[in-house]
Image (cartoon, rainbow, N blue to C red; front, top):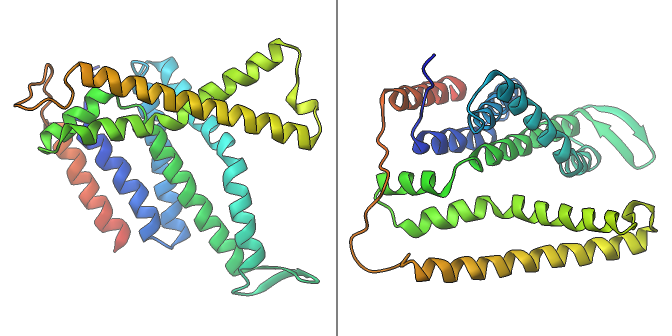
Length: 251
């Protein structure tokens, strides 16, 4: 079976369209369709990064589910705030000043779907390498600095999380369990680890900037590319499908 290879520009357009549609729509039915498409696309992109075998396809869906699970701690509090403070619509339950209305539940669901879609699209976009972003901006005749800033920015959060987990693992190896500490001490430990991880990222950014300058990243003159990628038939079909999908969903 022939593996479908899309131009990186097609992948970026898919992520932009999906993450933009959720903010243009207010119907729960249509938003559910968009977030489902985002979940499937994110899973396929992660499977593609692992050669798209049958096992990697299952891994892709598992990783997307794991992303959703880890995002609940960020999404649920924001949705709860909508439920508590949005009092539009019919009152479903009330206890003193606490009121739950249909409008609050609807807007909590809309906001949760929007955040979920953006997170899934960001994860799918993070699969792209610097060369993929470079090929995209070269095709659009845009400065190469844009491709570096975008590709580097996409990897900042995963790098921060990886360093933070590494520090937690080091504490466990030393016999220190942050979960068993008091809330005050736990917050102090997490604050120190977060600052250390951020300092590591900044230090790594400085080293990366120096390495790029030594390699002539911003040198004057016409630049050449080792590997050039061109749009193909599948890319044209994807763009047509995006246009048709946007028209169908918005109208």
